[in-house]
Image (cartoon, rainbow, N blue to C red):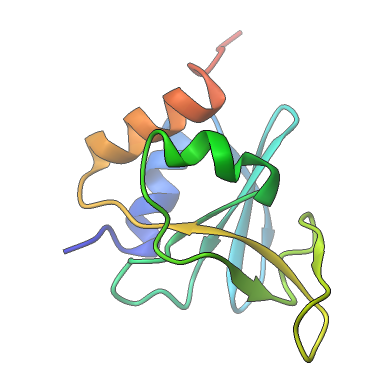
Length: 116
């Protein structure tokens, strides 16, 4: 069982990310220069966290992606996927079975949150 999108959002907020975009399909979160999306359509949570494609290599040392890519026209902070029939933005989807696993992933990928 994976964390639901709302649970992923709570962990992101606890880790210092701030929600700056809400759409029908995604929540956008920023912390400094880092940006992630929460896939609101991930009912079972397997693809709830979407990270920037540039982080794919580094992220695979921490967690296996749920799939190669996840495309969505709402992921506007991410690059366009030009190989598909429709040009949409894309990211790398991850799912986590516990808050602790997600926190470890975030800390490993983005570092500890810096609170002022």
